Image (cartoon, rainbow, N blue to C red):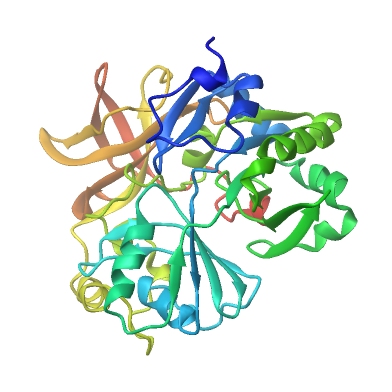
Length: 380
Protein backbone atom coordinates (compact mmCIF):
# COMPACT_ATOMS: atom_id res chain seq x y z
CA UNK A 1 0.00 0.00 0.00
CA UNK A 2 1.15 3.56 -0.69
CA UNK A 3 2.28 5.61 2.26
CA UNK A 4 -0.59 7.51 3.84
CA UNK A 5 0.87 10.86 2.84
CA UNK A 6 0.75 9.75 -0.81
CA UNK A 7 -2.91 8.78 -0.67
CA UNK A 8 -5.50 11.10 -2.14
CA UNK A 9 -6.88 13.11 -5.00
CA UNK A 10 -5.44 16.51 -4.18
CA UNK A 11 -6.09 19.03 -1.46
CA UNK A 12 -9.76 19.68 -2.23
CA UNK A 13 -10.76 16.49 -0.38
CA UNK A 14 -9.62 16.87 3.21
CA UNK A 15 -8.02 14.29 5.45
CA UNK A 16 -9.17 13.93 9.04
CA UNK A 17 -6.83 14.28 12.03
CA UNK A 18 -7.12 10.48 12.37
CA UNK A 19 -6.34 9.66 8.73
CA UNK A 20 -2.81 8.35 9.23
CA UNK A 21 -3.88 6.38 12.32
CA UNK A 22 -6.66 4.63 10.39
CA UNK A 23 -4.26 3.70 7.58
CA UNK A 24 -1.81 2.30 10.15
CA UNK A 25 -4.70 0.30 11.64
CA UNK A 26 -5.56 -1.29 8.32
CA UNK A 27 -8.06 0.98 6.56
CA UNK A 28 -8.16 -0.33 2.99
CA UNK A 29 -10.83 1.82 1.37
CA UNK A 30 -12.27 5.29 1.76
CA UNK A 31 -15.38 7.12 0.66
CA UNK A 32 -15.92 10.88 0.44
CA UNK A 33 -18.41 12.54 2.80
CA UNK A 34 -18.70 16.28 3.43
CA UNK A 35 -15.66 16.77 1.16
CA UNK A 36 -13.50 14.55 3.41
CA UNK A 37 -12.20 10.98 3.34
CA UNK A 38 -14.00 8.52 5.60
CA UNK A 39 -12.63 4.98 6.15
CA UNK A 40 -15.19 2.47 4.86
CA UNK A 41 -13.18 -0.75 4.78
CA UNK A 42 -11.09 -2.45 7.43
CA UNK A 43 -11.32 -5.85 5.79
CA UNK A 44 -14.43 -7.96 6.34
CA UNK A 45 -17.60 -5.84 6.94
CA UNK A 46 -19.26 -8.85 8.61
CA UNK A 47 -16.39 -9.10 11.11
CA UNK A 48 -16.70 -5.34 11.68
CA UNK A 49 -20.39 -5.92 12.50
CA UNK A 50 -19.60 -8.67 15.02
CA UNK A 51 -16.85 -6.50 16.57
CA UNK A 52 -19.45 -3.74 17.01
CA UNK A 53 -22.24 -5.81 18.54
CA UNK A 54 -20.06 -8.05 20.72
CA UNK A 55 -17.29 -5.71 21.89
CA UNK A 56 -16.55 -2.19 20.60
CA UNK A 57 -15.19 -0.37 17.57
CA UNK A 58 -13.54 3.03 17.12
CA UNK A 59 -14.57 4.90 13.98
CA UNK A 60 -13.13 8.02 12.38
CA UNK A 61 -16.21 10.17 11.74
CA UNK A 62 -14.43 13.53 11.49
CA UNK A 63 -16.56 13.90 8.34
CA UNK A 64 -19.41 14.80 10.70
CA UNK A 65 -18.49 18.44 10.37
CA UNK A 66 -19.81 20.90 12.93
CA UNK A 67 -21.69 24.09 12.19
CA UNK A 68 -20.91 26.36 15.15
CA UNK A 69 -23.67 28.90 15.90
CA UNK A 70 -23.14 31.56 18.55
CA UNK A 71 -24.56 34.97 19.39
CA UNK A 72 -27.49 36.54 21.26
CA UNK A 73 -30.00 35.13 18.74
CA UNK A 74 -28.44 31.65 18.43
CA UNK A 75 -31.37 29.74 19.98
CA UNK A 76 -33.95 31.60 17.90
CA UNK A 77 -31.89 31.07 14.74
CA UNK A 78 -31.38 27.34 15.33
CA UNK A 79 -35.13 26.93 15.88
CA UNK A 80 -35.72 28.58 12.50
CA UNK A 81 -33.67 25.83 10.83
CA UNK A 82 -35.63 22.85 12.19
CA UNK A 83 -39.27 21.79 12.60
CA UNK A 84 -38.46 20.05 15.91
CA UNK A 85 -39.58 22.02 18.96
CA UNK A 86 -36.42 23.08 20.82
CA UNK A 87 -38.12 25.17 23.50
CA UNK A 88 -37.27 22.69 26.25
CA UNK A 89 -33.74 21.83 25.04
CA UNK A 90 -31.37 22.27 27.97
CA UNK A 91 -27.72 23.26 27.93
CA UNK A 92 -25.79 19.99 27.74
CA UNK A 93 -28.49 18.20 25.79
CA UNK A 94 -28.34 16.69 22.28
CA UNK A 95 -31.27 16.19 19.93
CA UNK A 96 -31.75 14.39 16.62
CA UNK A 97 -33.26 16.99 14.30
CA UNK A 98 -34.19 17.54 10.67
CA UNK A 99 -33.24 20.62 8.69
CA UNK A 100 -35.90 21.42 6.11
CA UNK A 101 -36.24 23.80 3.19
CA UNK A 102 -39.25 25.94 2.27
CA UNK A 103 -40.95 22.95 0.58
CA UNK A 104 -40.54 20.75 3.67
CA UNK A 105 -37.75 18.75 1.99
CA UNK A 106 -35.00 17.37 4.19
CA UNK A 107 -31.59 19.01 3.75
CA UNK A 108 -29.86 17.12 6.58
CA UNK A 109 -30.65 14.96 9.61
CA UNK A 110 -27.97 16.00 12.12
CA UNK A 111 -27.46 15.81 15.85
CA UNK A 112 -27.86 19.20 17.50
CA UNK A 113 -25.72 19.87 20.58
CA UNK A 114 -26.34 22.75 22.98
CA UNK A 115 -23.00 23.65 24.56
CA UNK A 116 -24.16 26.86 26.25
CA UNK A 117 -27.17 29.17 26.37
CA UNK A 118 -26.09 30.86 23.11
CA UNK A 119 -23.81 28.19 21.65
CA UNK A 120 -24.88 25.28 19.43
CA UNK A 121 -23.20 22.72 17.19
CA UNK A 122 -24.98 21.06 14.31
CA UNK A 123 -23.20 17.70 13.80
CA UNK A 124 -23.82 17.02 10.15
CA UNK A 125 -24.80 14.21 7.87
CA UNK A 126 -23.52 14.54 4.29
CA UNK A 127 -24.61 17.96 2.95
CA UNK A 128 -23.42 21.57 3.02
CA UNK A 129 -25.45 23.02 5.89
CA UNK A 130 -22.69 25.50 6.77
CA UNK A 131 -23.50 27.29 3.50
CA UNK A 132 -27.27 26.97 4.04
CA UNK A 133 -27.06 28.38 7.57
CA UNK A 134 -24.82 31.26 6.53
CA UNK A 135 -27.19 32.02 3.65
CA UNK A 136 -30.26 31.93 5.89
CA UNK A 137 -28.52 34.27 8.34
CA UNK A 138 -27.79 36.96 5.73
CA UNK A 139 -31.29 38.51 5.65
CA UNK A 140 -32.56 37.09 8.95
CA UNK A 141 -31.89 40.25 10.95
CA UNK A 142 -30.53 38.01 13.72
CA UNK A 143 -27.30 38.50 15.64
CA UNK A 144 -25.47 35.20 15.06
CA UNK A 145 -22.00 34.06 14.06
CA UNK A 146 -21.80 30.87 11.98
CA UNK A 147 -18.56 29.05 11.23
CA UNK A 148 -16.94 25.63 10.98
CA UNK A 149 -14.77 25.07 14.08
CA UNK A 150 -11.72 22.84 14.49
CA UNK A 151 -13.79 19.91 15.75
CA UNK A 152 -13.39 16.29 14.65
CA UNK A 153 -15.56 13.52 16.14
CA UNK A 154 -14.71 9.89 16.77
CA UNK A 155 -17.36 7.26 17.45
CA UNK A 156 -16.69 4.67 20.14
CA UNK A 157 -19.57 2.21 19.76
CA UNK A 158 -20.56 -1.20 21.09
CA UNK A 159 -21.52 -2.88 24.37
CA UNK A 160 -17.98 -2.54 25.81
CA UNK A 161 -17.73 1.18 24.91
CA UNK A 162 -18.76 2.19 28.45
CA UNK A 163 -15.89 0.15 29.92
CA UNK A 164 -13.44 1.84 27.57
CA UNK A 165 -14.81 5.27 28.52
CA UNK A 166 -14.47 4.40 32.22
CA UNK A 167 -10.84 3.42 31.66
CA UNK A 168 -10.24 6.76 29.94
CA UNK A 169 -12.25 9.16 32.11
CA UNK A 170 -13.06 7.37 35.36
CA UNK A 171 -16.34 6.14 36.85
CA UNK A 172 -18.07 9.52 36.71
CA UNK A 173 -18.47 9.24 32.93
CA UNK A 174 -21.06 6.51 33.58
CA UNK A 175 -23.44 9.26 34.76
CA UNK A 176 -23.65 10.68 31.23
CA UNK A 177 -27.19 10.06 30.01
CA UNK A 178 -28.36 9.09 26.50
CA UNK A 179 -28.34 12.19 24.26
CA UNK A 180 -26.44 14.39 26.73
CA UNK A 181 -22.94 15.84 26.46
CA UNK A 182 -20.07 16.79 28.75
CA UNK A 183 -16.89 18.85 28.39
CA UNK A 184 -13.82 16.83 29.40
CA UNK A 185 -10.07 16.64 28.94
CA UNK A 186 -7.89 13.61 28.34
CA UNK A 187 -4.27 14.34 29.27
CA UNK A 188 -4.85 17.94 28.22
CA UNK A 189 -6.68 17.06 24.99
CA UNK A 190 -9.88 19.17 24.87
CA UNK A 191 -13.01 17.14 24.14
CA UNK A 192 -16.77 17.24 24.15
CA UNK A 193 -18.17 13.75 24.85
CA UNK A 194 -21.76 12.75 24.06
CA UNK A 195 -23.83 9.58 24.51
CA UNK A 196 -24.73 9.40 20.82
CA UNK A 197 -23.72 7.50 17.70
CA UNK A 198 -24.75 5.96 14.41
CA UNK A 199 -24.93 2.32 15.44
CA UNK A 200 -28.08 1.62 17.51
CA UNK A 201 -25.69 0.20 20.13
CA UNK A 202 -24.42 1.71 23.37
CA UNK A 203 -21.97 4.34 22.23
CA UNK A 204 -20.18 7.64 22.63
CA UNK A 205 -18.92 10.36 20.37
CA UNK A 206 -15.71 12.17 21.28
CA UNK A 207 -15.45 15.59 19.64
CA UNK A 208 -11.77 16.56 19.46
CA UNK A 209 -11.29 20.33 19.64
CA UNK A 210 -7.63 20.41 18.54
CA UNK A 211 -6.96 18.71 15.21
CA UNK A 212 -3.20 18.62 15.86
CA UNK A 213 -3.77 15.96 18.55
CA UNK A 214 -5.81 13.48 16.48
CA UNK A 215 -3.15 10.79 16.25
CA UNK A 216 -2.47 11.03 19.98
CA UNK A 217 -6.16 10.74 20.86
CA UNK A 218 -6.69 7.74 18.58
CA UNK A 219 -3.77 5.86 20.13
CA UNK A 220 -4.85 6.64 23.70
CA UNK A 221 -8.36 5.28 23.06
CA UNK A 222 -7.09 2.15 21.29
CA UNK A 223 -4.65 1.45 24.16
CA UNK A 224 -7.38 1.90 26.79
CA UNK A 225 -9.71 -0.34 24.80
CA UNK A 226 -7.32 -3.21 24.21
CA UNK A 227 -8.37 -5.20 27.33
CA UNK A 228 -12.01 -4.91 26.19
CA UNK A 229 -11.47 -6.12 22.62
CA UNK A 230 -11.70 -2.68 21.01
CA UNK A 231 -11.00 -2.80 17.25
CA UNK A 232 -10.59 -0.07 14.64
CA UNK A 233 -13.69 -0.06 12.48
CA UNK A 234 -16.15 1.78 10.31
CA UNK A 235 -19.80 2.66 10.72
CA UNK A 236 -21.69 -0.57 10.01
CA UNK A 237 -24.25 -0.58 7.19
CA UNK A 238 -25.57 -3.88 8.56
CA UNK A 239 -26.23 -2.53 12.06
CA UNK A 240 -27.65 0.82 11.00
CA UNK A 241 -30.11 -0.84 8.58
CA UNK A 242 -31.09 -3.32 11.32
CA UNK A 243 -31.77 -0.26 13.48
CA UNK A 244 -33.68 1.57 10.74
CA UNK A 245 -31.24 4.49 10.84
CA UNK A 246 -31.26 6.83 7.86
CA UNK A 247 -28.36 7.46 5.51
CA UNK A 248 -28.72 10.88 3.93
CA UNK A 249 -28.73 10.82 0.09
CA UNK A 250 -29.86 7.17 0.25
CA UNK A 251 -32.96 6.98 2.47
CA UNK A 252 -33.69 10.71 2.56
CA UNK A 253 -32.88 13.72 0.41
CA UNK A 254 -34.10 17.18 -0.51
CA UNK A 255 -37.20 15.66 -2.16
CA UNK A 256 -38.15 13.62 0.94
CA UNK A 257 -40.31 15.05 3.72
CA UNK A 258 -40.41 13.93 7.37
CA UNK A 259 -43.92 12.46 7.14
CA UNK A 260 -42.87 10.05 4.39
CA UNK A 261 -40.26 8.67 6.80
CA UNK A 262 -42.66 8.41 9.75
CA UNK A 263 -40.70 11.09 11.59
CA UNK A 264 -43.77 13.06 12.68
CA UNK A 265 -42.29 13.30 16.21
CA UNK A 266 -39.57 15.59 14.82
CA UNK A 267 -42.10 18.09 13.44
CA UNK A 268 -44.28 20.52 15.38
CA UNK A 269 -46.30 22.68 12.98
CA UNK A 270 -48.42 23.96 15.89
CA UNK A 271 -45.63 25.57 17.92
CA UNK A 272 -45.52 29.35 18.10
CA UNK A 273 -41.97 29.61 16.78
CA UNK A 274 -41.53 29.95 13.04
CA UNK A 275 -39.24 27.68 11.04
CA UNK A 276 -38.34 27.20 7.40
CA UNK A 277 -40.88 24.88 5.75
CA UNK A 278 -43.61 25.36 8.35
CA UNK A 279 -46.40 26.19 5.88
CA UNK A 280 -45.41 23.38 3.53
CA UNK A 281 -45.19 20.79 6.32
CA UNK A 282 -48.55 21.88 7.73
CA UNK A 283 -50.10 21.38 4.28
CA UNK A 284 -48.41 17.96 3.85
CA UNK A 285 -49.66 16.89 7.28
CA UNK A 286 -53.23 17.86 6.37
CA UNK A 287 -53.23 16.37 2.87
CA UNK A 288 -51.26 13.21 3.69
CA UNK A 289 -48.34 11.71 1.79
CA UNK A 290 -48.26 9.72 -1.44
CA UNK A 291 -45.41 7.43 -0.40
CA UNK A 292 -43.94 5.99 2.80
CA UNK A 293 -40.79 4.34 4.03
CA UNK A 294 -41.13 0.62 4.84
CA UNK A 295 -38.94 -2.29 5.82
CA UNK A 296 -38.40 -5.19 3.42
CA UNK A 297 -37.15 -8.73 3.73
CA UNK A 298 -35.74 -9.80 0.36
CA UNK A 299 -35.97 -13.48 -0.51
CA UNK A 300 -32.75 -14.38 -2.33
CA UNK A 301 -29.21 -15.59 -1.65
CA UNK A 302 -27.31 -13.47 0.90
CA UNK A 303 -26.39 -10.13 -0.63
CA UNK A 304 -22.62 -9.74 -1.05
CA UNK A 305 -22.74 -6.12 0.14
CA UNK A 306 -24.98 -3.06 0.28
CA UNK A 307 -26.81 -1.98 -2.87
CA UNK A 308 -25.00 0.64 -4.95
CA UNK A 309 -28.06 1.70 -6.97
CA UNK A 310 -31.73 2.13 -6.10
CA UNK A 311 -33.60 -1.09 -6.92
CA UNK A 312 -37.07 -0.88 -8.44
CA UNK A 313 -39.99 -2.39 -6.52
CA UNK A 314 -42.87 -3.77 -8.61
CA UNK A 315 -46.32 -5.08 -7.81
CA UNK A 316 -48.24 -6.92 -10.53
CA UNK A 317 -45.91 -5.49 -13.16
CA UNK A 318 -46.31 -1.89 -12.02
CA UNK A 319 -43.50 0.14 -10.40
CA UNK A 320 -44.53 1.09 -6.85
CA UNK A 321 -41.26 2.29 -5.29
CA UNK A 322 -37.54 1.74 -4.77
CA UNK A 323 -35.17 0.04 -2.36
CA UNK A 324 -32.94 2.72 -0.83
CA UNK A 325 -30.66 0.64 1.46
CA UNK A 326 -30.25 -3.14 1.43
CA UNK A 327 -27.82 -5.54 3.11
CA UNK A 328 -27.55 -9.09 4.44
CA UNK A 329 -27.78 -9.34 8.23
CA UNK A 330 -25.76 -12.33 9.49
CA UNK A 331 -27.50 -12.07 12.87
CA UNK A 332 -31.03 -12.14 11.41
CA UNK A 333 -29.94 -14.45 8.56
CA UNK A 334 -32.01 -12.36 6.16
CA UNK A 335 -31.56 -9.76 3.45
CA UNK A 336 -33.09 -6.62 4.95
CA UNK A 337 -33.81 -3.27 3.34
CA UNK A 338 -35.29 0.16 3.76
CA UNK A 339 -37.53 1.20 0.90
CA UNK A 340 -39.82 4.00 -0.25
CA UNK A 341 -43.14 2.83 -1.73
CA UNK A 342 -46.47 4.29 -2.82
CA UNK A 343 -48.70 4.65 0.22
CA UNK A 344 -51.26 2.17 -1.19
CA UNK A 345 -48.62 -0.54 -1.05
CA UNK A 346 -47.09 0.34 2.33
CA UNK A 347 -48.84 -2.52 4.09
CA UNK A 348 -47.02 -4.95 6.36
CA UNK A 349 -47.23 -8.45 4.90
CA UNK A 350 -47.64 -7.37 1.29
CA UNK A 351 -45.48 -9.30 -1.18
CA UNK A 352 -43.69 -7.39 -3.91
CA UNK A 353 -40.95 -7.92 -6.50
CA UNK A 354 -37.54 -6.27 -6.12
CA UNK A 355 -35.32 -5.92 -9.18
CA UNK A 356 -31.87 -6.53 -7.69
CA UNK A 357 -28.57 -6.29 -9.56
CA UNK A 358 -28.91 -10.05 -10.19
CA UNK A 359 -32.51 -9.86 -11.40
CA UNK A 360 -36.05 -9.85 -9.94
CA UNK A 361 -36.71 -11.59 -6.61
CA UNK A 362 -39.59 -11.79 -4.13
CA UNK A 363 -39.76 -9.59 -1.07
CA UNK A 364 -42.17 -8.88 1.77
CA UNK A 365 -42.97 -5.60 3.51
CA UNK A 366 -42.26 -5.79 7.26
CA UNK A 367 -42.09 -3.53 10.31
CA UNK A 368 -38.94 -1.48 10.84
CA UNK A 369 -36.57 -1.31 12.60
CA UNK A 370 -35.57 -4.95 12.24
CA UNK A 371 -33.81 -5.26 15.61
CA UNK A 372 -34.24 -3.72 19.07
CA UNK A 373 -37.15 -1.43 18.10
CA UNK A 374 -37.24 0.25 21.54
CA UNK A 375 -33.53 1.25 21.26
CA UNK A 376 -32.90 -0.47 24.61
CA UNK A 377 -29.26 -1.21 23.71
CA UNK A 378 -28.33 2.39 22.84
CA UNK A 379 -30.24 3.93 25.73
CA UNK A 380 -29.11 1.39 28.35
